[in-house]
Image 1 (cartoon, rainbow, N blue to C red):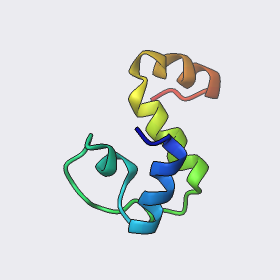
Image 2 (image 1 turned 90 degrees about the horizontal axis):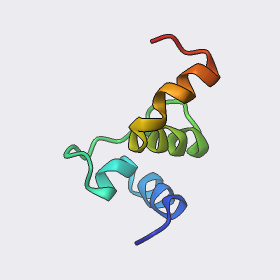
Image 3 (image 1 turned 30 degrees about the horizontal axis):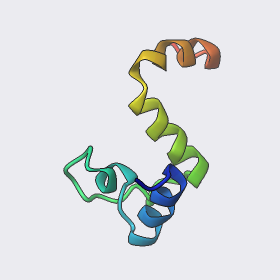
Image 4 (image 1 turned 90 degrees about the vertical axis):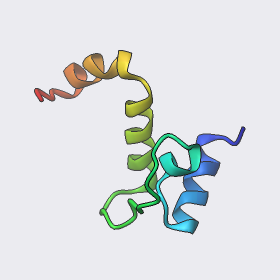
Length: 65
């Protein structure tokens, strides 16, 4: 299994989402159109993959969604 950083680099090169490469989303749609850094994309992927941590992260960041 490749590391997250490797998948993120591959996704950027191929202009697809890391989630598509991991097989967790069906659409090949690129997320490179958003003005986010590689680090920010990795954070979003990690957040999505850890639903049990999301509430704690939201509290830490002051997000009331």
